Length: 615
Ligand code: ADP
Ligand code: MG
Image (cartoon, rainbow, N blue to C red; front, side, top):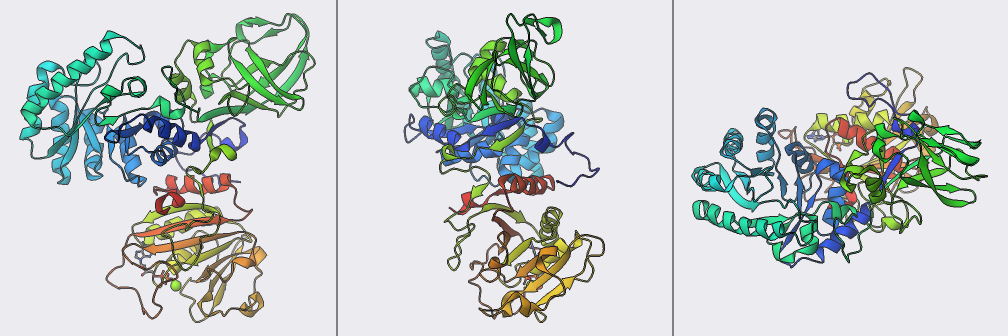
């Protein structure tokens, strides 16, 4: 059970005990990105638009998957999203474009520091970005947004010259881009598309005549990217297509990346005349079987779709498409399973997904149509009450998303001396010993008796520091110090939790036995941390966590350090270090690793998939 405490920011409920899932297939996003990429000339870059939490798919997962498919830029409406992307260590140009002075003045300095690009639509916005740049003493990279006819963001033609002159005159900004947005790119053949493109050329020229050459021009959203190659220019900004939904007919193979699932809570036989739901909008004409699904408009399934959508129910007798009947409630819907149905409570219900991988599954488009909405709304409406989960199985392909299976590859930095074990890997930067201790405390909160942690890294990497942090989160006695001359020390539990066993395996030879440690505690009832334990103690348990600590800048990887280095540099007490956590064995399912990753993020750490960074 996850720890429960009274800290602010706890979600209202633990999604583990709610059956609703938005299952995200990062491989589909990677595939779709590569599909879109195949339409582009080598001179055109692809910005994956990951606004609105990656169109509801989870921003970081979506961003990583798109980068794996050939995106080289990321875009998000909110500066706060841009900052989160930058802090997650996604090392590509990032653009954001929607802010106002009150919150903007708070976040723009961070954005400029993180070298995230900002769109500017007015002299007032220019002044805001300039003052942020001045504050942090760095040049802000800006894209001037041109209003070519959408009447939303962007500078009007009459004001372009003044904004260009302002950008030129500023010592604090660098103009890197000019951009605009189509209002009807999905209305194929609409004369407005060409009219906006013409105006974009004209306004860009005006801007350049004041401000000098603008290196990156970009205009195309998904629809224009798919249909108007002449408007690709330097960069395209697809969004919806990357998630597997084409806004226009296309020959590309686009695969929906989100599957929304639930489970039947109740199944009952009813007679003819049975009324269903608020307002009695449905009456069963024949005897039938009704299924109750615990997902409703408070999860993002719009009420306007009532009595129009379908779901796919997988029963013991096969899968069936069942109509949704009655008014959609806040927490639940009812589906008509037909007379004599084999459906049982607990059966899986797919509300929408990819019919290519789940034959019969409704597409998100069908729910959009049923509700009189667009697919974008269906995807982004599925809210935080529905847990996101990364898809398992063959469609996952070689891109496992945020939690990478580290099989075969070095988990981080590719130490040549040791092959990385297969497992789920997280990578976390720390900026000093206290941060390393905090990471350890989070792990300690998720540890239990019998757990084994193998600490690897050169002398002075922080193995003992990590152990100190770990111990401080447990109720155990004794001061944790470097155990170098004692090999092992037991820190006895003070309450009814497990003991902590701290081992330095450096002096253990090849064929030692656990008994040689002569412990007063057995490993099954303790949590055991072993410094220098790599390739020595893994066999003690069927599952273990490998904690690798890296001193950034040190050329050596764990295992390759010169062991006669006597001590750490005493002047360097606060150094950035990278921690890689690899969870190996049946003890660690994807959900439990995700829980640790979420807790670390909740504690302010940037957590990324270690397999991605050094692959
Ligand atoms: P090890 O046990 O791996 O030999 P120690 O934990 O004994 O290493 O020593 C690590 C040293 O590095 C400590 O002095 C600690 O304060 C310092 N240090 C500086 N930055 C960090 C960091 N980010 N994480 C851990 N330790 C750090
Ligand atoms: Mg040590």
